[in-house]
Amino acid sequence: MELINNLFQFAVTLLGFCLSGIWYLKDRKQTCFLLTCFYGCFALGSLYWTLYLLLFSETPQVFYVSEFGWIASVIFLYLLQYTLSSAEERDFSTRKSLIAPLIGIPLCVFYCTFGDVLSNLLWCSMMIVVSYHSIRGLIYALIQTGTARKIRYFHIGVLCYVAVEYALWLSGCLWPGYSISNPYCWFDLLLTGCLFALLPATGKAVQT
Image 1 (cartoon, one colour):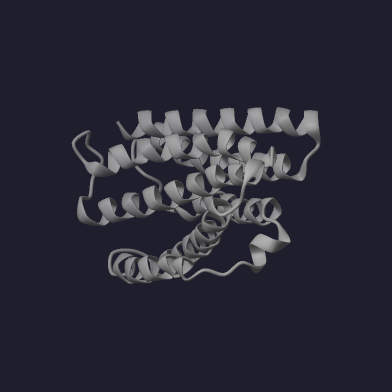
Image 2: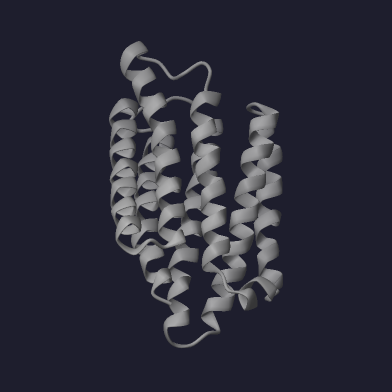
């Protein structure tokens, strides 16, 4: 089941890479380029993980190889956030953004008790940053009118991605293994859906 899920995730992110790449070649927009890089890096990380599973029938022992690609994808996602946001949005302040560290920091402490401390600190820090900016961006978008409100779909997409990542890691800590009855399996599948949903969500944001 893990191999099937990973093959599906690789196929979906590869499709996202191709579609966003075509979009970039057509419009030459920086946002399209960053989205292409996001999907490309994630797909590369998934490719290594999937090939290792396929060849050795076990998860990679040196998982940092895949993490390089996945970490790079989150960096490009943050750059995409920044590019899509206006100067007014970046200057906007709301206490609701503090939800990001209030959730992320305790989860980070919990994850560190189960896995690699450095990796968990890095991942949770990135998740806190992108969720902080998306919460702020979502609140800002909701008080706008007209097409400016469309960027809320992008921020909702990012928040869904972060939430599912957190749930995926949490289920991995509490329920080790990858059987079809394991929540980790279904959260991994849900993550794939969230990844692809960022493509149309970004499309709506670009229209603003």
